[in-house]
Amino acid sequence: MSQGFTGAILESAISYPSLAAAGTTTLNNADWHVVVITTSPPLATGTIKMCAAPFDGQLVDIRADGTITGLNVSANVGQSVVNAPTTLTAGTVMTAVYRASNTTWYF
Image: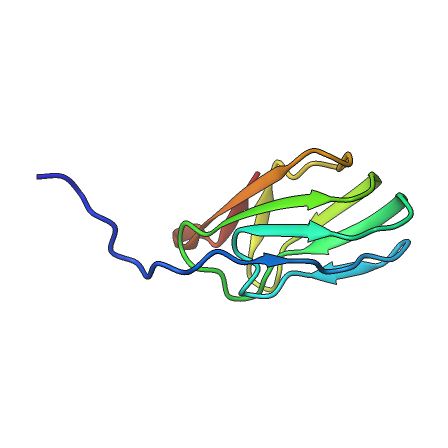
């Protein structure tokens, strides 16, 4: 007998949060698959804060339309982040998956 998926299946959505120089953008709980950070122009520094109430196995693919040289990916309250990139180059994707049992985002 194979194991089946027991969680809710959500429809994929694309969101476009903006990130200003030395600013922070916080992902919301609906930002669960494709997120495009709009940075125009490229940024020396910026912070992406993960969503507050993710579900187990949630994937977030993050792209930017401009390079973020000094990237900080921060966890939300009660969470942790492992192996987050410190730079996001325009045209590349960074993917995170959330594990609820230890409240951790893995990149």
